[in-house]
Image 1 (cartoon, rainbow, N blue to C red):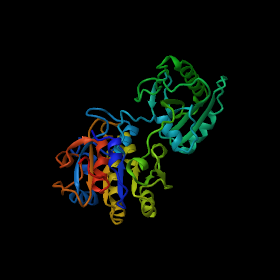
Image 2 (cartoon, rainbow, N blue to C red):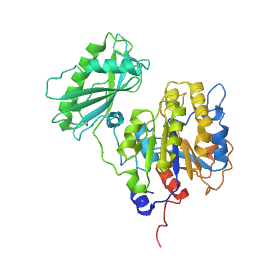
Image 3 (cartoon, one colour):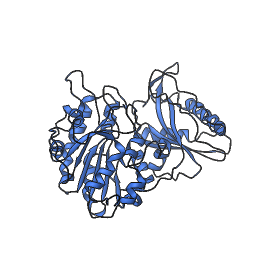
Image 4 (tube, helix red, strand yellow):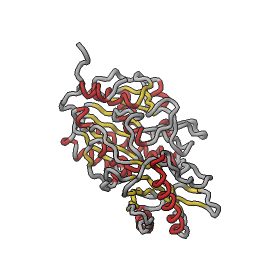
Length: 402
């Protein structure tokens, strides 16, 4: 297994440049109408041309048959063992919106959701309310007083998402989620997962109960779900491991938070795909590794909107020349996990992976899609291995052994 310690011992500083373009939730499943996945249905001449000059394969973000969350999927793509290096969703959300998450704080990711008269969840995302509405409701929940000397922060993130941070003595992140992650069920009671976590579980359940009383007349956002309780982690930085100057271009806060926690420079960018590619060109001279994250494909998959996901893939394809015109030494295109529209959620299916470099053994595949990548020369591999491939193709690794 190629790990960070080995890569760090071989990495050398060079002027070569690498780009990792992540289309969130890229992998799909065949549509029953046309028998094609989203990638197969999409018109992607630029990605196909890149593939024909490069190499391809499939990656498993965590392991065969394991459905990956976003954080472990991205960590794996950056070379971190996702089973060893973990970052909780709450910490990612809080850090991603520039909140000063302190050492002993406990953070969770929150959703405003919709429940019916019997308390059953009918929409985990409250109709994807606007960020302005999320901010308004977050201010309302910030007034909750638990009367225990514990300070509460309710921080709007984007759309229906918010971050909940608890600050005080005797807190633990070792508690369960209230989010069943599916509709048709009631929110769960938060439970302690260790003897030290009893106080935190009681406080969170009290906060949820008070939140429901404040939100009951705010349909569709008449309840909350919380998950991913965590503290701020301390992981080795990409810059020190790989001898690079990494930069992150992402509009969604969670991915900016992850990038910050592994030592990337966060570049200011707009929310659109076009603006992200413009940001890349603007800062190309200042960095030698770019992580570009596109969220739209995952959102369309989660909404079960096959056509919208196809359209988002095609929009990304139109901007691929913005990358290739800069002539980076290595270009990688992949996803952090699969989000088939047919499943309306993350799945365990392996993810298509494209690697371009002048040192590639040229691909025999014609189209960037799941079926072509399944027979690609790179085979099927752990996503954790792609950074080693990128560094090697950028001539940034010295020889191992005599």
